Image 1 (cartoon, rainbow, N blue to C red):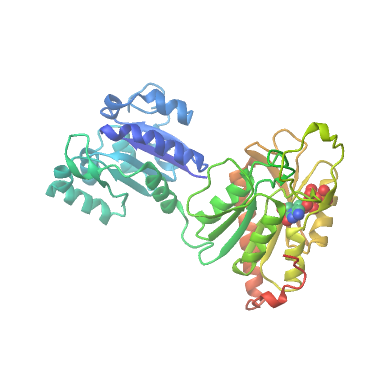
Image 2 (tube, rainbow, N blue to C red):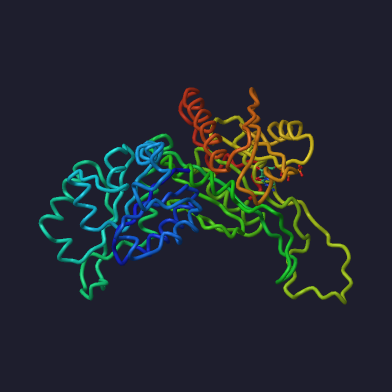
Length: 418
Ligand code: CTP
């Protein structure tokens, strides 16, 4: 999760910045919007305020902002400064160090990475003055999301259209990604519930929403990992830069994970997989109440995590992490799962509490490994994801110290029933 300042400047495309703010928020970031005076002529600050649930900064000299010299304190707090749309005027001001409003003053103070998405008339974009300013900024490490070609608000057709909000969001993600900490690694993550169909309209499911798995996938991608997210039916938007494999049932999830198991350096199984499925499979026709079906025969599903633990046996890779969602005796159950499933880490959480269960953005967990148990206090799932990944990185480094990875082949697939 990052704290992003979104500068909106005076272009007809200013309304598209609303989508940029929403996209960044959906990816788990906190967004604060700064509007220039001319941006306010195109779009009202209320729209951004409602979306970001934060005050929108429109005036450097607003009473209350100066006690803490807000443009200085915000400049130090942000992880990224994004300007979308960026007019020729703001590009010129940034290039020449002009500081005549909040956004331009903050630009001079911040050391956070800067990303700009220009939008202007084609001739303005091609003007030697603008080209020179862009060059100056590029030379200082400012990144740009290039404008596209098309119909412009001024009636012309050509280059200068603001890039699509989704491309701007992806570029921000890319610019935030710390180079390296999981670069060259592949992480497979499962997320969400599974649905065991009874008939064409009914299923057995659970209350998992996939938030924890999605937060893990997002954070791992940001650290540079290749991420495969095997997701049960979830209605959340999927993070960008992640390979998503959509599945429905426990058996589909089992198959998808097993097919990809040799690709992963670490696997984090955050999905709430059904433990039972209807024995005779889904009925092709809808069950009718006149059939008086009062009991449904169920069969155990395959335990993906246990099968992975069995397949890995005594080998050092992949690192295996499971979750234990408990309502009582959390640590006792977590320790038992750690051993029984032959995994390296169990993330135990008490789902009986309102702020640590399903469907909320917060969690408090205990990381249970073979040698240490670490309580992680209540915080957002995005923050918990970072703590889990720090531990996964430690485990990966520990395995490296043990010697080169023994490649597990399909022939070692002795315990998998996929
Ligand atoms: N898991 C799995 N495949 C299953 C069931 C669970 O991979 N068929 C994984 C989950 O993704 C999670 C961990 O195993 O990482 C949870 O363990 P599990 O024993 O299934 O937990 P519960 O279903 O809560 O088990 P129990 O009812 O025995 O407490």
